[in-house]
Amino acid sequence: MQFKFYFFHQNTLIDELIGIASNFIKNNLQFETVVDILKLSESMNFNQLIDSSYKFISENFEEFIKTSHFLELEENHLNSILSNDEIFINEFELFQSIIKWGKHKSNINQEKEKEKENQKLDKKDKEKLQIQISNVIQKIRFIDFSKKELKDTLKEDLIPNQISQKLIQFQKLQNQKNETKRNQFIENQNSLIFKTRKGTNLESTIIEETEHFNKLKEWINDNDFFFKMKKGYSAKRDGFDCKKWHDICDNKGKTLVIIKTKDNFIFGGFTQVGFTSDKTKWNQEDVDEQDGYIIDSKAFLFSLRNDKNDRKPKKFPIQPIEKRYALFYNYSQYGPYFGDGDFIINSNMKSGSSEFGNSYKIPENLEKNVDEADNYLAGSYNKWKIEEIECFFI
Image (cartoon, rainbow, N blue to C red):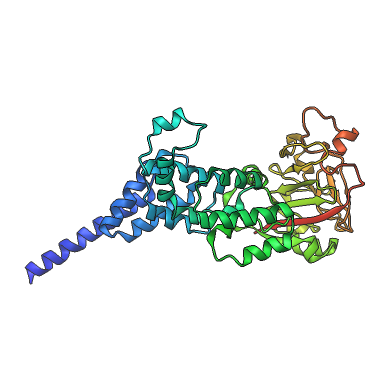
């Protein structure tokens, strides 16, 4: 009996030791070690560590693909990770990293590649690469490529023919700008390449360019918000109605507002504290009692598209000395109201005005209270008409 108890006790101690070691490793995973730990865990059937390794890689995938350790993943690892709809990643950058991974796994001479950086692969190396990436490539969400990215990718001629033919069809529909036909085509495809990941899906009819999405992600700098946020309000869906907007969007905390005008300007704002028409709903330190404004030091405005002047996407943070004027809460008869009139959406939710620069920073070449500043976001001070407003929050 003592002999059996000794071994029972010893095995229990070993199990406890393994558990302690496993928890330590799980809580101290790093880019440099995670692939080796994943492979070792698989060989020893340590399911907890396998799951923890995948979770660590997936949650840090955007940074992980930029490291050399990404190249050490096996095909089954990539297939598992890329099947995950929740990962947050720029799909075009992912595709480029998969090409590098494929060259590494195919033993294509890297020095030769550096010498021929702007040249095509020779036929033999190209065939090796195509075979290596043929399965993994089917998990890339090509639907999230910009038009230029998709065009450049198809030119490289590295994608399996069956997939490239579908992408060419999709590309034609994109160029025709027929949203109904394009959506119907996507619905008929039973393929991951036409399925947007949840972590990168704004559910927006305004944001179509990958660059615009990536800029918003960069500016907000809060992956948790991006993973969880949903489109709470759409003027087209819920009505161009100020009361409806307040009913849906008041007291929601962090909120992203995106506006598209009928002249094709796209702009908006982000607030950490959110909107309200009832100051009693707020922490008093966030409210300026005297003037009716909400304090938000992290709020910013942005411009994504200005077709008149072909400006690139830009972010405009609240001026530090103006942070107490970030948002106005005391006008329930208005829609989104940023700054001391920097932009205001009228009660009909179909028009607005902009005195850009009162509270938020403006481009260095502009001065506030001049026409060029007032015209910057929407094309004019108060003559712009709204095509759509979308608001996102958790």
